[in-house]
Image (cartoon, rainbow, N blue to C red; front, side):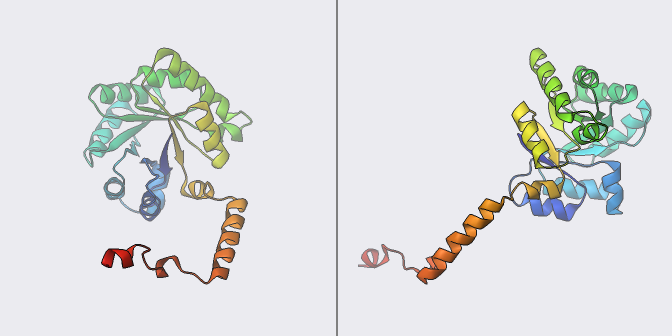
Length: 229
């Protein structure tokens, strides 16, 4: 499973990308707005940090407007994926862009029927929002299971990109269902490192080591004397 980071905060992206665990980034107008910077500057900087796909979303709602914005965004960097909403105009735009070789992430997916349309339109990614479905009493992971099953039955190439992730358990469930990608808020990715038994075990190991009075780097190379001889 690939991990994308769901943010437009370049400092956060740099920090997490340094771990080697980040495969891409997703942004949206709300996330870019929080940066208080021009979208082109933000997206260009993110693309410099992360070599994998960076989703940049159009804000127009009509096909002509979407296409114009998409072409501008795609010109910023080679690793841009254009993000369009799952509407009639969005899917029409997806088809044109996909046919022209531009990767497209179809977002705001809330049903298997919508996901099927996205795949038919040639989307590189479809983004089902599991957290928002959970919020209204549905089970977001049920949708992931449906989409994965449908795509496998027809060998669709569209990747299932799990969005609106609220915690590590969403990531785990998505992985168990065979989703291709999870786009994860920085705070959630950091939560995935944590377990109280890991902290407790490390504390015990370090306490035992301190009692020896040794330092690993303070030890001479065991073979250094014989090598010198």
